[in-house]
Image (cartoon, rainbow, N blue to C red; front, side, top):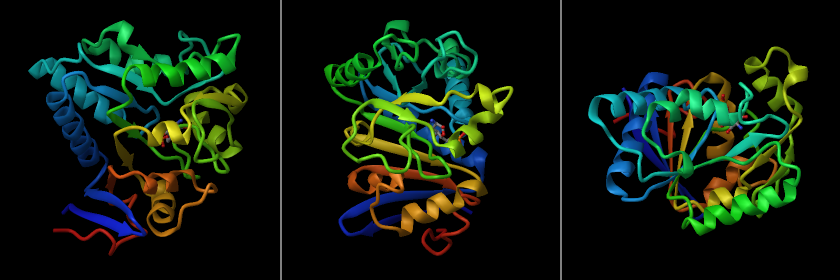
Length: 261
Ligand code: GLP
């Protein structure tokens, strides 16, 4: 049984959709994104990496192959990239997007944007990335995941809500969580370029995907605590159009907030 609720507290409004499980969360996320693609002529779509959106991307590919939903007019921006990993590096987010989605759909190469993690001028890269998003008219829909410590993109606890695209030192817990994709933790980069919290909040709409028991505490904090830079995802409460699709395990610590109906 799934349900929907909205959390309205102190001027914030989050729509929360409860999915049965990871498969159901992915199916709902896919449908949400497909609706936007169909309704918006030139959709500026913000992509996230990580384990959470992988199935959603598979469903987008399947839909492209079966129904021909076109990405030709889509302009994409990714949240972040590791510093020091080239576009070709198997663990770079450039490769993640290529392997998990882009190579299978008809998105135009020149419409794909991720920060460059191997530039010689990182400050300039951050500024250019931020400006590029502005020049293209801003992001219409930003897909987000959440870290166990509440990070969004790579904005770790302590990040000001005013930040634009910037360089971050990754929290040790984030490096440990992401070590599963690398042969050992020493290979996980120590720094990344990420859209800032302000960059994310400038998106017209946000879709946050959450799955699994390891995210239950983060979701509980998001739904019950006040805004705090110690918990970056709390900034989402400043945004007027956020939809959270979370599965039952992720919502297991907040039963009662999301009623089945
Ligand atoms: C990573 C990414 C985030 C992602 C988060 C959760 O470090 N930079 O964009 O949302 O951590 O990842 P996962 O979906 O694998 O739990």
